[in-house]
Image (cartoon, rainbow, N blue to C red):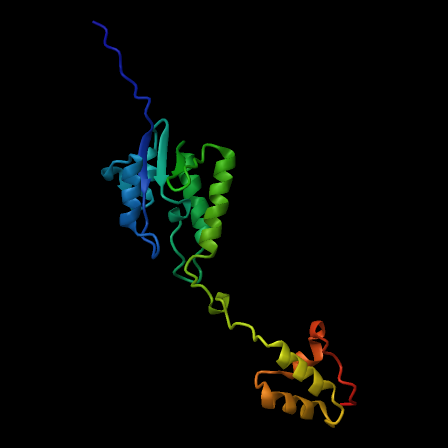
Length: 198
């Protein structure tokens, strides 16, 4: 009796997770399980998926985002970008592809692979950086009424003040936040050089 060997056409899936401050391994594992990766095939060391896909046809290493293949930069001399390239090359050398769960991209498609790597390098470059304080909204600009602007114009061009500093002092008695820079450079409101020699 002849018995045919059944060849599975489903791809072999294994996953990889790495703990990150803003992307926990537990959350990554949950996403990989939803994608269809069995929990026993989810590894937290890169040697695991590389060995698992070795010699398998249609093997796919599934990650939430590609940058998790590279360890975070902890030492000055470590280079996560090179580590990312090494991981991608090690997986692809075994004939496997890499799929990102969040984007749905697969490294088997050259354009998607290039996009995945570019995005991963961008995330590695900016990883661990807190937003700068100066990126916030900042101090709101001073707002002046038409009456205040008219008063400042009158005092600035009033030549009874002997110096620009005296004219500014007269303006600041009524409008404390007024500056010399505003008097000299706010041309849209009619300000400019005072006509004094100082």
